[in-house]
Image 1 (cartoon, helix red, strand yellow):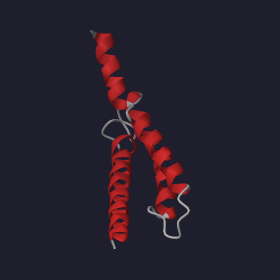
Image 2 (cartoon, one colour; image 1 turned 90 degrees about the vertical axis):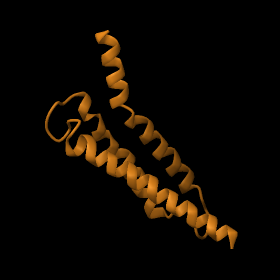
Image 3 (cartoon, helix red, strand yellow; image 1 turned 135 degrees about the horizontal axis):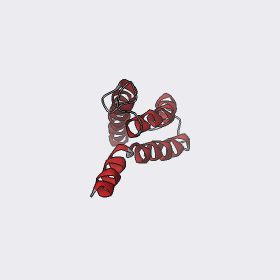
Image 4 (cartoon, helix red, strand yellow; image 1 turned 60 degrees about the vertical axis):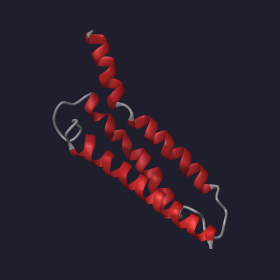
Length: 104
């Protein structure tokens, strides 16, 4: 039972890797957009790459119980949540704007 509990805890903590892969994949697609006005601005694409790299700090709770890398710490929780929230909301905002441009 302890092994299953530990496995579930590690799987929960290390979900950041999937988000980082998603961010890198979307950045690759966004860099290939050669339109005069791309759907996602280049500055946001570069911010997506930087955010994906910064998500490495979310691995901290697997190894630390206190400090900035802990589950309740700045680098272990708050920075990854801010990166995810900004990525999700800004990308959605620019996608909606692109839909409005196409409608016009």
